[in-house]
Length: 306
Ligand code: OXD
Image (cartoon, rainbow, N blue to C red):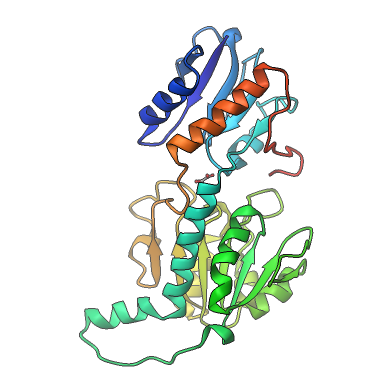
């Protein structure tokens, strides 16, 4: 039997080599060259195109090479009874927390405004807010968000969190009421998975609930945003800035207005890149579990969507 490997990343060869080193006896087939489809019983993928895993009758498990699994959850050609795992690697959480803490501080300190002033050689002190008087809200309180919160807590920000379950998180005012969370939010961090409930979550109406001149940080998925609504909110001053790491589609097309908007900071989906060495170790363990007939870990609830 063989493992299907589908990876859109520039360092796909490095991942394949690391997985081969972890699983020296396994045969790997690199998508789209699946060969004999019946001979594939496991797949390593990252956000595969819809249908990429269709017609694999012996498939016993799928391990995502990243934390987000929305593409697989949305793909009706993947049989519901094939277990699907997400990559849960502490390194992902560390990387995400560094990125988010960096962007929160960037906006909190007004650094983008000073960069714009520098372009016109303008020497002007802008009003300052202390962290104690600043509310940062997280939509989504999974393990990545919780690590970001731990990193931010020592600064003293007022922390608000919105999640479906409302489960408590230390030092965070958790609510299941999205409107109430948004009304208090000065810096909004989106770290919620894309599901049928959250697709297009940030509509014009939701953005209007934020206090004026709020900041938006999207490290979840591009599909969480109504992009036209975000651009209008930036143009009207409702949003004072946006740091966007994820887009719909990716790569962000060259003609997209985000590229040139003066209040938008763009990074190319780098907020928590999977790390090859530890990632390959974790992924190989998932394969071994599936081969041994044991349950894989970090399984996705396909009905809930994450
Ligand atoms: C992921 C991602 O899903 O990087 O891990 O988006």
